[in-house]
Amino acid sequence: MSNASMTAQAMRRAVAAGTLTAEAAVRAALERIAEREPVIHAWQCIDADGAIAAARALDAHGRAGLLGGVPIGVKDIIATADLPTRYGSPIYEGFRPAVDAHCVTAACATGAVVIGKTVTTEFAYFTPGPTANPCNPAHTPGGSSSGSAAAVADGMVPIAFGTQTAGSLIRPASFCGVFAIKPGFGSVSLEGVKAFSPSLDTLGWFARSADDLELMRCAMEQTVFAPLQPLEPRALRLGVCRTDEWPAADAGGAAAFEEALKKAGTAGIQLRDIALPAEMAGLVEAQKTVMAFEAARSLAPECRDHRERLSAALVALLETGRACGDDSYRGALDQAASGRRQLPALMHDVDALLVPAAPGEAPAGLGATGDPVFNRIWTLLGVPCVNVPGLRGPQGLPIGMQLIGHVRQERQLLAVASSFHRVLTAN
Image 1 (tube, helix red, strand yellow):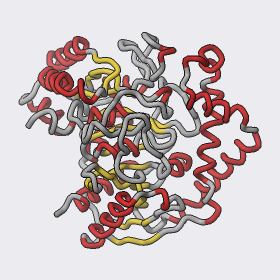
Image 2 (cartoon, one colour; image 1 turned 90 degrees about the vertical axis):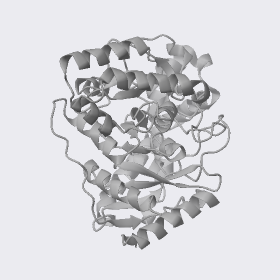
Image 3 (spheres, helix red, strand yellow; image 1 turned 90 degrees about the horizontal axis):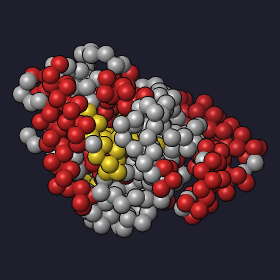
């Protein structure tokens, strides 16, 4: 099995069994990157020597661990002491944080090997970097976690960290045809992650299987060596929620959603239509208000000292946030709190909500990253979300399905995602 198709679970088992060394796994990742990076441009920087040295140390000490020998990518708004952290902006060219972010420390403590930093949009907003979609390089991979999504989709690494403030994990996962999890708000430490909107920012990761998402979740929860419990297949009860944003779906996206429902019905999944109450209709605008207001404060030093080096789109957002009054901001937070209180009753007899992940296939061109319209509500509500790949649109590009889980039930949501993926990919 080549590194391009090997999952993190298979890789760690092979390293633990002695049939694969961590160094061989890392060298295979570096070879894949050397082959494909001139087309995909997923990486901001690579530390080949450091990665090989770390892998050799793992092999020498015989330490497998939860992530033993697995090469990973780290989105370049996440601090790394041994690698530059540029935040997608020329303002921070060559910047070296003093310490690693918590997530990097936790991953490496369980045996992961950091290959390098993946491309992000400017401060994880909308102005894209050079990354192309591995499924068709003429199309965007989505953003802001563009490099991480593309690196996993192209087989460069089996897992990569990303973040989401609006739709920056689920949307690129849908566009690139990989799994991604946005955990519930506050369930994973953001220490060492550049703040954009602290009420919304969430750390997550991409992988090529639900089991690999679970592997990293366990690594984030515990930095000790421990048995990993596999995700169990299960019968499913899904709430079908198109949301008020359904008109934003294009023809291909709408057709893929209906195909997913048909496959689910054929597989015997219990489906129940769920409509969000009228009081939740303004949550998309509330998310935009919170994001703009908080970004204006998080990036105030950069805007004050380096305004001319910021993109016009980011400056416009920061100006909108500065002009937003406290009453509007507090009102948006109150809307979010009200939505969180109502959601458990809506989901009380389903395992997860099935909602669109993106309007459709990845748009053509690299000048924009696509619309996060189907992600904003769920980020604002702070619930766990997973993109499940498996379907294709009219141009042959991936279209994912988004599953929304119960608060603090990430493992259960991943079990649902694993079972649902088998349904989506069944003939």
